[in-house]
Length: 325
Figure (cartoon, rainbow, N blue to C red):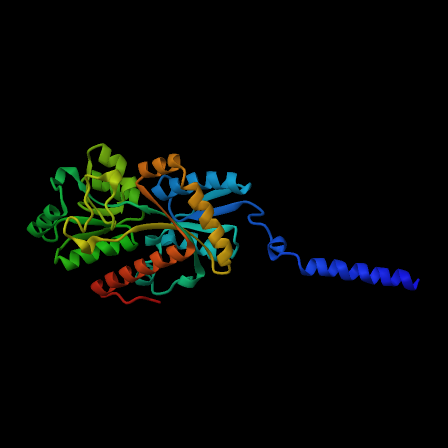
């Protein structure tokens, strides 16, 4: 019996030692272990929506789990953001343009979330953001639009759908000492339809949503707010190239998760997204929707978000708006 106990204790000791020296990676849970959800604060058909669906399809093949894209528009993006933050689940992520939330502190006295609740996972693309006018207005440049507004102060209208892009245009008007009437809209599609019919005379929004009306000859894109010139839209200058840097703001798009998500997992997802975006076929499809492929790590996305928040803060100072937080 004594020999049996000694052998048993020896075996137990070896087994414990084996567990002790097992690599940490072997003990870490695999991810994803179930379907992943991308929540989008915009409706179907936007450039961001199309981007999310293209990437989700490829990631589902790579991860061996379905990646479901859910449109959660409304509430100035609060519905989608609150759903992601409230879930506190590393399988429920926010796929969004930064402009939908970086302006929140300037637009709302109280927010249901904090900036720290949104953990940057990956920069994905830059949406091309255009300043559009009705083609019959006869305006072909920002300079001509400025002259038109000055000639008819307060008589022309611009659309506002809330968010950083609208604050950007309002700050541009104040900087250039221009008077335009603001017309609020609940969604960009309705605003662009009214732009095409000449009921409003200016709107800053995603080129992808404007494109059908541009192709019909009803809307003219006179500038892009993006910092970099877009090769896909070579004929359209950036606002800075047109001489109006006060109209510059990048259409940053990326993936965010809950603050409890580890950096290691966020880096893994970012690397997988970069691999997906290396596909030339995906690149071509995204370019057609007005997206510039620009993948980046959690750290790079965080830096880009910080830059945009600083820019939006400067816009707030120009407009005399104090940030809520």
